[in-house]
Image (tube, rainbow, N blue to C red; front, side, top):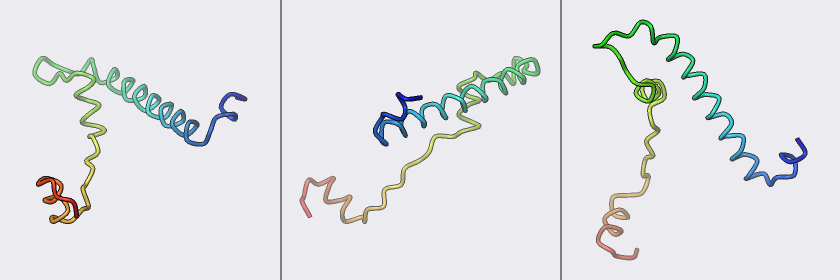
Length: 78
C-alpha cells in the first residue's frame, strides 16, 4: 500500500486503470465460460470476439474543422 501512495498521481491513475481493465476482462471471461456449454459449431465465438461485442472499441472523434484537416493533409501550416 505504501508503494501506491508513494506514486505520482499520473502513475497511480494508470495503475488503477490497468487494474480496472484487468478485472473487467476477468469478469467477462467468467461470463464467456458460463456461456461456453451452450455454444454450437454454428454459434461459437472466441473470447476475444465475445469481449469486443460486449465492449466495442471506442472511436475517437476528430473535432477539428475541415480546413484544419485539409491543411494537415496538404502539409500547409495554418
